[in-house]
Length: 304
Image (cartoon, rainbow, N blue to C red; front, side, top):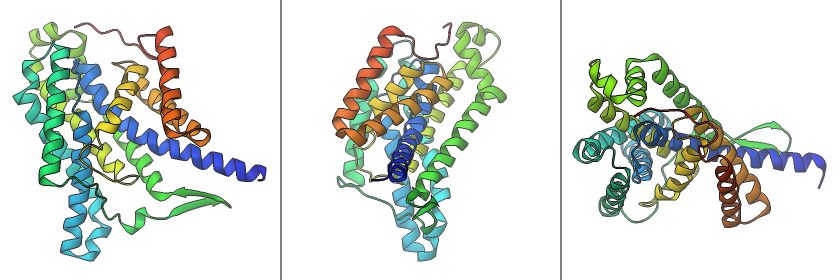
């Protein structure tokens, strides 16, 4: 095997890591907003990802039933629908359950774990226990060959572009919008934010719903690289918490850096080891780093 062949294999493996990075970052962004900004341990976060993935599947099924030509244009609209459905589900759960449990993180963990199990059962009952995959548009299929022997999947490029768009939108919203100003004020000093007229309860609800909506977009991205089942989201919840904890609970920059580091480490080690060994090695490295720096890579000072 020549050096060029090894280089191409390494580049393709690295790009596979970028695809995993995109999904982990979208999951981590939503969780960073909920966990890092609000202190809520949302164990049902993976199920909001599953809502987004099933939305893409249902959109694909609807497009095929309407017209074969509709499959070429349904995907962007289904991504928006995935965000809206997960947003609405998050809004309802925050209103009905989470708002009663603020400042009680262990209670939010137990409550959202129960919500997670209930949502998984709903998926099994109303959609089915088997894994499903949507029919992707033709423009998402195939690969791009920038050099001989180097094939980069087009769906991976699309997911990276979608991730960059969502990440940029979240950063702009947090630092350039009224919602972001309210969130930052509430995180900095909730009592003072209430005193100056900010409705912190409404801000919490909107923040939780937006975090869930971003998880729905992660589910939409996930459908381009894997099939969806009732427990698909739970496979990523541990990795998402690792991303947020490793990067720093209240740091979006840390979320981006840790998602990239975890995804690339796991992808590269999977080339030499089995998948389970790669995960174990990645987790061991994270634990060792957190022992030295328990506040994460980018710690933020927050007053409650």
